[in-house]
Structures are given as structure tokens and as C-alpha cells.
Image 1 (cartoon, one colour):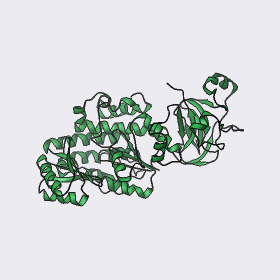
Image 2: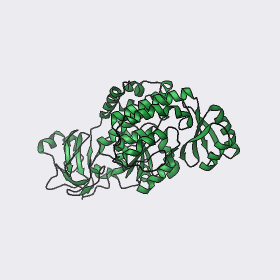
Image 3: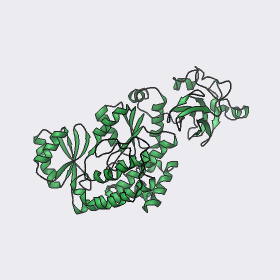
Image 4: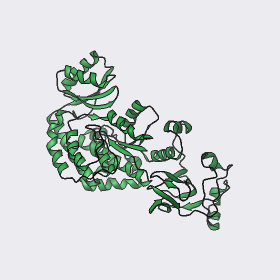
Length: 439
């Protein structure tokens, strides 16, 4: 099981959408631009650091890119077993869970960004990271500073973010260091988010929330405010409203997800901040980021091998999968039946180049046969192999899971099925392997 986590404001960077511009999922950028009346392509491709730092721009750009990445994962059949988002990322998680639609999510993020920027201008403030201090001690340091400073994010054990006025942050810094904090680092943000200084944004955001129809989430989702699962649509309006001025309980959220025994936490979107926090909590064995198209291939590679994430990365030297390999995954759960399965399947030859790169594919894996004409046309591509793959194209149906089509997102040579006909599979499970021509 995978847990998808979505980053918040602060993860944005100039040019963060460039690697996605020619990807099919980029169509979401055009839809979001039309829905919001904003030029989101500009924000993702051309905006500089100062422009992206503005709250109204940072939130919209980060939210939309997360949905682009999410769409790319859904296109290859990957679905999470649970979702959560950090601050702004909670809106991405709600879209991913089916609790709100794309247009409603975009409109809420637009209103949230505008409301929070106005609140920051009306009540100026900033944030800082407190390192090497436990939660209780940091709370005590805030109280002892006797000023307008509050805990904003419980990010990880020993890493807490506080928010308040600049004067209050300065007092907190002195008190926290006296109480044993290792460091207090200023965070260059545009306001004191998740603190009472955001109170003036609530009315505008609440009005926007009241215009949205919420549905019961289809995927388990945990809220920032209380680090609890909330599967009732009626819970979310008040949770989103409360989130503005309440701390994000992030490490408590990840601890809650552990009850589901996830295989990995996947940060969906730009940045890598949430992966860093997860690694701080769980070590290197449970976290990775999908922020560019190649990362989708890497994740599919992790899922295609029966290894923990850490062992997979070590066995591949930390590199991405070779660009000539792809796997096709099940788009639903149920009984799998291939389309082009031959009556006399040919096993992968033990001495073939493919068997060396896919050592887990033994004679129980089944290959399809191509026609004589196809074999002749593609002979140069398979000259080194001892078997006959089958040519497929993007959009081809390679099988069915119950009544749901399994569609290839790539063009190439279908080298074999990874499951038997009639075998029960789970959504997101790799079911076929192919190679594609190098660019």
C-alpha cells in the first residue's frame, strides 16, 4: 500500500513545471487556468522566485502541479491506500480522495491564497524552524516568550515550526536556545501561517467553503487539525476553516497512517520537503518523491520488484530505471485476463538479455507471440532475444481486470505478462512488462 502525501506552500521553485510541459497530464494546467482565470502555465514555467513567493501564486502553482503529478500516476493505474497533505496540500489530498472536484479545489485554493495574502498584509508576521526541541518544550518556550508566537507545524520529532510577529519570533529564539534548542532558523515566508494572525482570512475562506459540495472521501484521508481519519463529507468544511489558524500535526499524521502498514510514503509534487520529514521519522526505507516524469518510472520499478524501497534503491545504485523499460499496472482490482495471451506461452529465455535485467521473471511468466510480418519488421529490435515479443501502441488494451480495461500508456514491445490469466490482482499491481525504443 502507498500513502500519497502532498506538499504545501514553500515547496515551489522557478521552472518547476518545465519537465511536465509536454506530458499528457499537462492538460490539467490548461483546465485549471480556465477555471481560475489565472495564467498558471506562466507560474509553472516562467515566474521568478519573487513572483512565486507571493502567497496567492505559491499556493495555486503548487496545488496545480501536485494534481498534474497525481494525474500522471493515475494514468499508469497507481492509486493510493491513503492520502494527506501538508497545509495547502490538504486541498490536493481532498481532490485525490474524491471529496471535492477539480474545479472546486481550484476555486478554494484561489480564495485561500488571496485571503491569506491579505491577512498577512493586515497582520504582518513570519515563521521559524525550531530544531532539537520536543513538542512540549517548544510549547513551553512559546508561552515563556510572552508574545505573539505559536506552534504552526509539528513536522517531525525535533523539528517544529513556529509563527508570529517578527518581534515575537526574536524573543522565542532567545528563550528556545536558553531551553536547549539546537537552532532556530528563520523561514522566508509571506506571513505567520497557521496562527491567530490568519484569523481575518477565515470569513472569506469560509464563504468559499460553503459554496462547495463535499462528498465522502473514497480513500482514507487524515486531517491536519487533529491527525485523525475523517471519511464523512460533513466533517471537512469545519476542518478546512479551522486549519487556517491551527497547527499542522504532520508527524502525528504519519504515525496514524502506520496503522495501515504502508509500503511507502510518496510525496506527489515539487519539493521533497515531506520526503525529508518522513525519512527523519522512519529512516530511508519508506519515503520517495514523484516530482518529474522519470520519478513515475522509478516508482513503478519499486513496485515491480518484491523488495523494500531501501533494498531496491541500493540494488539500482540509486539510479532511475533504464528508459527502455516500462511496466503496465492494473487499473482496478479483480481477476486479470490478457488480450493477446498465446495458447502456447514462451517463457523468457534464461540466457537472454531480458532475463538478466528482470531476474524475478522466470518460466512462470508468459509471453505473447507476434505475427510473422511483425517479427520480420522488428527483427533488428529483438535480434539478441530467444523469443518473440508483441508490438503495442499507446492506448492499446492489453487485458482486462474484471470489466475494466488495462490500457498501455506506452508504445513498445510487450515482453511478457507478470501475472497468470485468471489471477486476482490489486489496483496498481504491475501486470505486464515492455521495452520501448530509445529516443
